[in-house]
Length: 481
Ligand code: APR
Image (cartoon, rainbow, N blue to C red; front, side, top):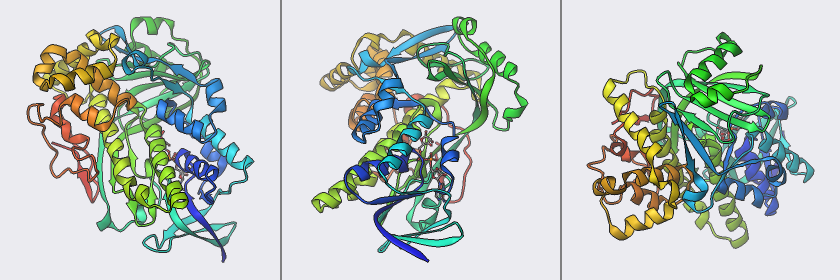
């Protein structure tokens, strides 16, 4: 058997593994990435495309953002369409300058792969039967490559192997707790070499179901329509897709949309999933290996980057300053942010979709919430002003809802969407800290176990939206009130 030793062994060469590898490599920390697929396969996956400011900052820090800055599309806001009209949420104005950048995950992965190769950092592709051992004391990663068994001894293992990976599955059942919710619908996505219908993303709520108009570049569009879970992409012709999309978007978008042949079409399920904790001795989980959010808020890739940022800094601190404080705080810090995003998507996803079992009251309540977005006066106010006003005046949320309900709504949307404020500010904005939102319906037995305390989904009562049955796996806690 061939053996070698590194400081950090990373399992998985998706965005999490590659970005972590690059940050560590730049800090002089010896690492190897072990990936079960080929590089071409990894690059062939069509995934996310919206990068938040903090992700772009991290990519700058990793020295891989040159092409992103040249080719990425900066979006100052996003648009929402419902009731036949379109409304803009202006991120830059509301957050005092933050924006998002549209840049395909595939391109980002390509940039990370290229720089890793140029700098001579090792990645082992097509590694079979990857397994992790001894992470309570002497971590080891084993696999087969070209028929031979190999072993990598290391100080730490980073589990960056996605939702279906082996690192999380290798943790003893008693040491891990998982929370899962599978939404009763999916997204049918179509990629085409056509100019986007709008300069900004359009999130559409329509009685026929949700639709999203997004893009990867000025010439490449990515569109989605909500579909049933058992839908097959093959049973949709391109024409059927375009017709359905046009029915769901606002009239202007329907008229101006440029259609063309699809490059790719696929159905994706919508899932929320969190595993706690994210550290098991010398094994650390990051990215999709530890959590999934529905794509509605474009959070998955950004959360993965945020985990990686925390983990890379903690490892640098460990080797440079001989301090394990960052490693000890990693799981709590990462989960704090994850639950904030989970809460946001739990609120935003039902708001924008057609829920199969909705009764008329639910539809009305959702329309009412959406009309707040359309009329929101927060369009001209920085979120920080609203947040600080709320703090100074100590408004309870019920009173606040009379006075500035629309602004609160805008803040909630923005603070969550852009991670534009701290977790405690976000909690204050929605009144969780004061317990003022009536009585939040705390999901049974739900505890985040993170240092955030209040946790994301315990705010269930605030939105007034119903939960519906979730699929349960063993040792999974239903996020259901
Ligand atoms: N051994 C080695 N590699 C593995 C194994 C295994 N047993 N199982 C999975 N992998 C690899 C996958 O082939 C994949 O390349 O781990 C990688 C995980 O990559 P992703 O699933 O992309 O997860 P992550 O890197 O955390 O990316 C974050 O952001 O946009 C979101 O969900 C989207 O992929 C995205 C994510």
